[in-house]
Length: 154
Image (cartoon, rainbow, N blue to C red; front, side, top):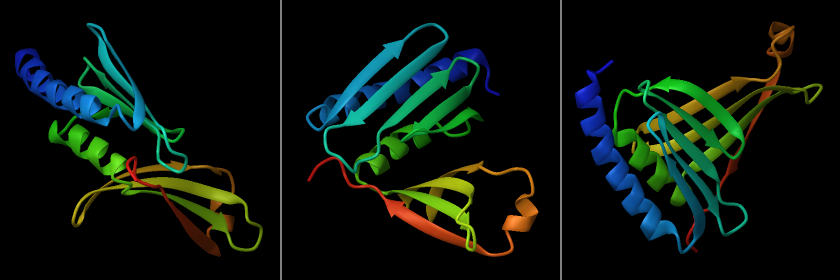
C-alpha cells in the first residue's frame, strides 16, 4: 500500500485522465460519474448493442471493483494507476472477450473469464468459478467458447 498522500496524488492524475476519456466517449455511451470521500465510481453503458458495459469503482482503501457486462470482480488491489485508462480504452475499442468453460458432455457451466486486451501481450483477466462442488468431475472434458464484444464507435 502507498502512503495516503502519494495515493491521493496518483489517484487525482488518474481521475483527470478517466474524466477526459468519459467526456470524449459520451457521444457513444451513457456515462455516470459519482465521487465521494470514500470512492470514485464510473458507470458506462454503450449506445450500441454488442458493446461491453462496465462499471469501475476505485476505493479510498486502495482497492478497485470492476464489473464487465455483469461479471463482477471486487476488492482488487491497485498496483498500477495506468491500468484504469487502459481498461477503459480497450473496452471502448472492443478488445474484450467473455470466455465460458463448460463440461463438454453435459453443457454445465464451470467457469467464466473476462479478458481485456490492454496491449500486445498483456491482458487483464477476471475469473469466476461457477460450479464449485464436484468441479473436478466436470473438468475432465471441457469446452471453451469465447464471445467477442464490439467497439463503442462504429
